Amino acid sequence: MTLPCALEGHAVLLVVDGIGYLMPAIRPDMPPRLRRLLGLRREATIRGRCPSCSATATGGAPLAPRLGESIMEHEAWCPVADAIVGPLLARYWRADARRSSGDKWSP
Image 1 (cartoon, one colour):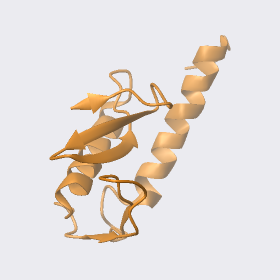
Image 2 (cartoon, rainbow, N blue to C red):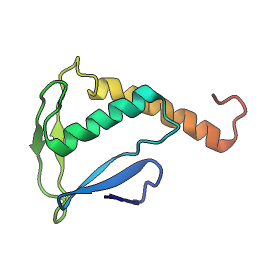
Image 3 (tube, one colour):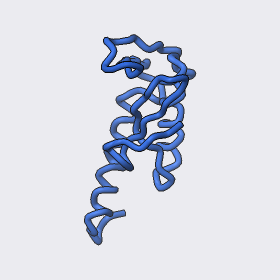
């Protein structure tokens, strides 16, 4: 189930087996590579193990009932590592902000 959240368009709250996961939205206008990588990262988070590098989630303290915090440290070579996905997502959001503001030079 996908529920709306305060970051509409930027993030989604996915509820799987009664557990909420706040994750970046995968939008149809994103480049195919970014959509694919965010999908792989979403799968890794929900399953608790990365299918690419076998990283596992380490749990933090619960933030609220049925909503927790976890960290998954992917290998540097993993296609869904922060160092790879982060810059792609940041570049997309910057371009999206320019498009939204009406900047005629936006891609």
